[in-house]
Length: 147
Image (cartoon, one colour):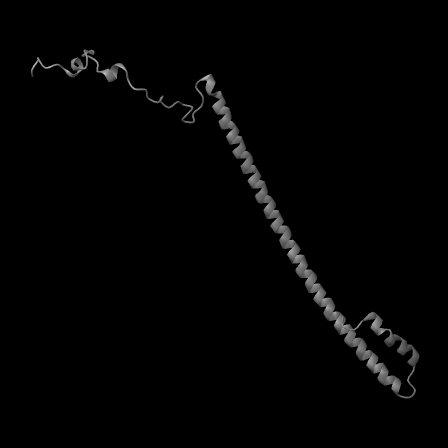
């Protein structure tokens, strides 16, 4: 093309025709990633603090995991204890109900025996009337009504 026409570099005030201005003064770029920023082991003495920080985070993570496992074990033990307590309560309740039934049966039996005794004492010539009266008179003391 025409040589009388100046090149771009010459038109800008006579800068070097071999290097454009942006190549002579490149813009500042962020530094390339380092091994440290990528989580690698330190390759320089100044990066050792990052490794120690990583180690402390890993140690904390391990501590938290251990604590979680211990809590999980404790919860499992507590569940077993709760099941044992529930089982014991059920056994106690069953025992209480059996005792209550037995108590009611004994009261009924005592009433029946006292009634038979009363019937026998009304007949002429019944033996040991006073002794029998004492036994049945004490019955409310041993078996209060309503229990």
